[in-house]
Image (cartoon, rainbow, N blue to C red; front, side, top):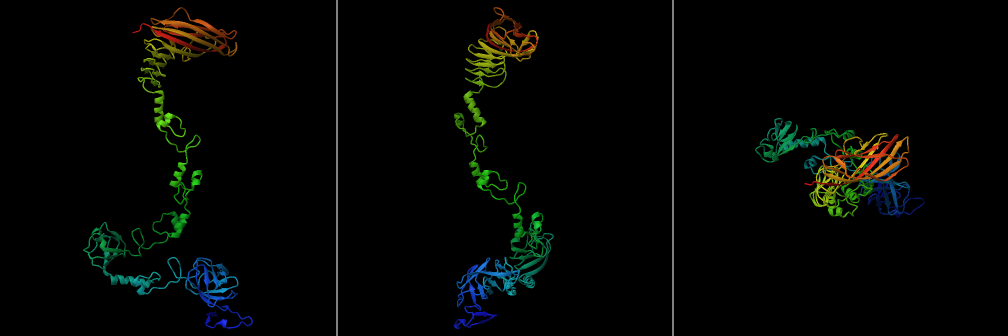
Length: 571
C-alpha cells in the first residue's frame, strides 16, 4: 500500500526492475501502526531498506507521546519527529501525538517532519477532550443525556433544559411553590412529589435545612409531613445551580483572582488549584508569617545557625540526646543522686539545693544547738551550744553551755568548766569560768592628740565597743601593741614601735582595779627616735587603752589582747 498525492494503490513496486533513477522501497510512501511510547517503532510491509529525503509515511500511534519522540522504521535507526512552530522545527510537546489518528510524516534527510500540524502548535487532528485536556468532544444525544452513563460527551443548553423540564414535569409530580420564609414543616407527600422554593428560608421547622430560591424539595418516601427530625430523611433537597454558592448552598461561584487568593479576605469566590499552588509556593514561613518551611537536616540542627528551617521532633531529640553540659558548653545535664553528691567524685551531674543541704547537714551537722556535735552557723542573739561538742559560730551573747562546747561572737559566754568562749568585745556578764577572749583593735591616731582612746569599732572617743570587765570577774591578759607612723613632716612613714604588756584586772564591786600594779611592758621593738606613749586606764568596769599622738605625725595603732577570765562568787 503506498501514498501518492492522496491516492492509494495496491500496485507493487517490488515487481519492477530499477531503471535509471526510479525510486523503490516505499520512497513513494508507506502506511503502518507504530508501537511504543516516545521511542516509536514502525514495521512496514514490505519493509524499506533505508531512509531517503522526501519519504512520506502515514502513521497511527498506539500510545500518545509524553514529550520529544523518535521513529524507527524497519530497523533503519530512530529519527526525531519534529513539528513546525512559528516557522521553525521544534520537538513535540506532550500529547501532540494522539492514539489511532493518522499522522503524515515526511523525512527531510535528518528528521521526520509532522506535516499535518498547524504552525503555532494547533493540531490538525486535536485529541479527544477530557477533564484535563482540551480537544474534540461529541455532543451527547437526548437518549445519552437521559441515561446519564456517558462521561465523554458534552451536553448542550437546549438538551439540558429539556432534561430538567422532563424531570420536573415527568418523573416528578410538580406540586407547585412553597414559601420557606416562615420556616415551614415538610408537607405530607407521596413518592415523586416535588415543590419549588419561591422564597428562601428553612424547610423542616426552625431547626431545618436552609434552602434558596428555585431549590427543589423531592419526596423519596411516603410520609405525613413534619419537622426535619421527624421526616427530613424522607425528602431530598436539590439546590438551584443558578444561585450564588455559599458554604451551605450549591450554586454558581466566580474563580478568585491571584491577588484575592493572596489577600485571603474574600469568602465568596473559589480558589483554583493553580492559584493555590502559586500562593503556597510564594508563602514561606517566618517568625511572624505562617507558611511553607523546609525541614532542617540533622547537620543543620546540630549546627544551630539556620533560622529559616524547622526542626522535627526526632531531630530535636537526636540533637538533645547528644548535647551534654560541660564547663564551657550549655546543654542537658542529669541530676545527681544523694549518693553521688555524698561521694563527690562525679563531675558530670548537677547538685540540687536540697541534696546539697542534706550533704552539708551530714558533714557539718548544721542543726539546732541541742544536738551533740551541732554547729550553729547563723547570726543571732543568745544562741546556745547546749549539747556535747556543740559550737556557736557567730552572733551576740552566745553561750557555750554543754560539755566541751564552744561559743564565739560578741560578748560570748561559757557557763561550765571545760567550755571555750572566744569573744570579740568582752565577756557576757554571767557566772562561769575558764573563758578565753581575743580583742583586736585598729585605730588612727591624729597628730598631737592626748590620751586618744582605742575602741573596737575604730571610732576613737565613741563609748561603744570598749574592753569591759564583768562583775565578779578576774581577767589575766597579754596585749601586743604596735604603733606605726602613717604620714607626717617629722620622722619617716613606716617608723614603728612594738611592745607586749602583761597584767591582771579584777571587778569586785563594779570598778576595774589592777592586781599587782599596772600592766608590765616587755619585749619592745622600735625604730630609732620613735617613742610613742601608751596607757592602760581603768574607767569604771572598762579598760581603756589610750595612745598619745606625736607632733606632726599621723599614727596607726594596732592592738591584740589575749584575755583569760575567771568568775568568782559562783551561784
